[in-house]
Image (tube, rainbow, N blue to C red):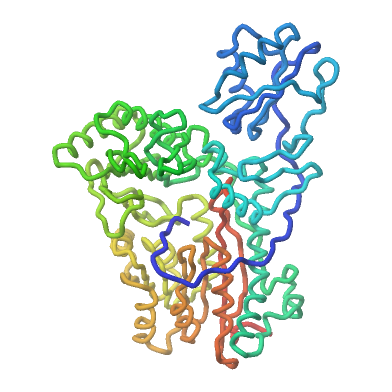
Length: 603
């Protein structure tokens, strides 16, 4: 979820402990082996930057760096941060000495004799799933264990947080795609189990809330309710099969990336992701050329901009506490399925003359690189952090003012700061599932809360009488209005302001006989407490579809929606949940939750 936290909410409590993920029925591909020979010395070659490289890439690098020593055998799998390399025994000492003095993509290479190799350099290779004979350490401090145990997503998330506090040691690939070492079926199962654990916490959180309120526990919290539904064990509602990404969109799926312009570990200019922040405030930037989430086109953009900035008369912004000087700060890129790309450069404030010089040189550079850049924007920022300040205008400098994004037959246009799901393919699945959960009739009013540029409401407008969208960001509301006009959708109204202020007025001014269905797509913090009370207390709202990028805050909100202070109140009941993987290879997952009034749900 890329939506910024715009409104305060109660601190989310952690969901219940997560059950272990099941081992997949089928493992991933076997390690790649290049050229075999006997009578050799075998070495275990490791380097954190090797993860993401296949055997052919490593073999080419070895041929260039130690060309005097032919490799007899090489075994390497893309997700491994190590490889097994065999050379003739007569070359062993020299090979170890030469390779041990090298760096691969800025990271030191470690070489040691493989003690597990027997006569002729033979050994028991890792299994086809990619597990080494011993426990293999991952970037987040996780272990892929012998015996097939798959760690839970919660374990990995917790360890990633701890790693972040200690200072991340690894590549941009390891940090941005920590699940890449598992096949996609395993990843999807891990995420579904994580969402299921949150669903299990609905009733537990509701029970605790009822104890605090001094009221009885609603029927949907009981074990008997779960059994009668045929729901998963200890779940109070149905869970649909998880919605995963198709195979062709597992790589290069991000339609939006925000890159930092800084320096890598070697001190060279780099445009990529932040690996770590040093004690003095300096940032170490990792390149994205091997990061599978980033489309090839954006990877090439980063390379071009890195080269351009390195030769630019304007310096990179120095983020050290003793610095705070310089110009180049960040690069934002958005791309549609046709390959058209919108880019926005963030710099410190420049004079008109310097601004024109910087922009003219930048546009000429990206235009000559044939990257499909159709729009260029510039934004100034003189603050300590790179975060874009609210209501700061992006200056249009070149090309089109908007980027067109297709969605369920609509043509939506977005700007550099518009809120839009970063995965176009799974966003389509998210919209389709949300509309199915909404169960709209032609007389219903759809209240689209946190509507962004109007994506859900506009896609659902043909299924209801009217759509009323609410968002705190005025630019989003203006985009939503323009997108409604552009697609000839007349039954919409979009309002800018805080949801907890606007929604009670909207519902209060509405004919009480009208039935309202709400869809909420909040930030990670979840719903504002007053908004929860409003939605639960206004009985004309018969159904809510909750689109969540943080299932822990969603669990808190569902428990509150289902337990008011009035025991006889027609509170909401959880009905269905589905996990949606909009972020393959990462630790993030979305969920869609349907709740309905208890009067509409059979006991």
